[in-house]
Length: 147
Length: 306
Image 1 (tube, each protein chain N blue to C red):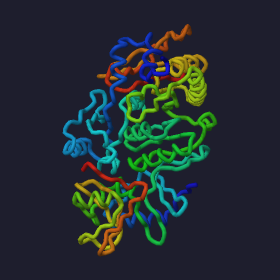
Image 2: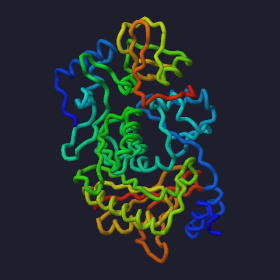
Image 3: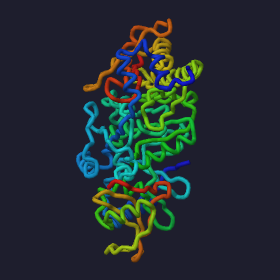
Image 4: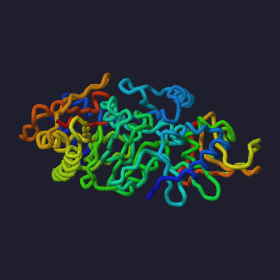
């Protein structure tokens, strides 16, 4: 069951997107915002009441104490992300898509990052200063053969 | 002797009277289908995505009747980085036809996909709509909704509402276009790897016919005047195609429209099957025969509510 997201929570996410990833608010003007179970945040079309929707739009964040971007979000808005990007090589890309954490070096500030390969946004990672922790959902793990 | 008959033999025998070139047809349905895919331009520019794929598969070929569709010699594109990131969707070519023939009607409107899972057409429609407007993607089975949801997520689709219900009990909802890609005996997928190759009995066609008529009737009843209903199946069986359309067009005041697609050879709908005559307008339906375009088999009808 989704309900419309209140303005305060929406602003927390917009602010996070701007500060963490440099994404402009204008990128989100066409969407209705919803909140569902486990504080999942969705963007999508206008709700039609009578049809009992299973889901509306796309889950882009979880909003617990702090906002956590989903891999859906990173993959869709990857082209608009201007900072906190980790670019992987071939070997690490294969490992990351297969669900592994990586020991890499990067200059990014600790927090959630967009993990990319060859300008393709692969998904969400969490950089703690030492390890890039994989945030891709298990159901999406994949052994990549072609890249 | 009948016990040793393959599914392909049985199909060729059953439809021998309505196939134009039986020898070519038999040859074609015994040949495996090449993998085809569609570029999801919601996730990137077509040229850039295609160029990256060409790095490991230089032989991909553009399909002449669909700008975004390609054929590959590889069999496991599902393990490519482009598939992982939602930049491509592996889809049988014929299944791309229904959204293409009405693409001018899709912009920013409300669309209902009555039998949406696993989401091939829904994601294609969303791509044509540039993720704007509103798609209601319905399916009646929970397990199939999961695969639909997974594909919508992977391709970054934001303009879709997913519903889980038997479409025949769906609340009346106005839309510009209704897609009824009905469950069917799937004979047209016989060339696909892992195809469901069951030998259907005559009573199975009757069973599908009943389900299909129910779905199409509901979509036609729900559709406002001037809106469009696209009915499709991936089977050769007239019981599931022309017979279904024939029974609905007069009952529900629907006008059949001619279908054409530049670069694709299409057969006409048939007007006579097993001593049953259909309305002459049923010829406006399109039959996609495997030997005409090196694809699977498919059937499409485009109707407008009067």
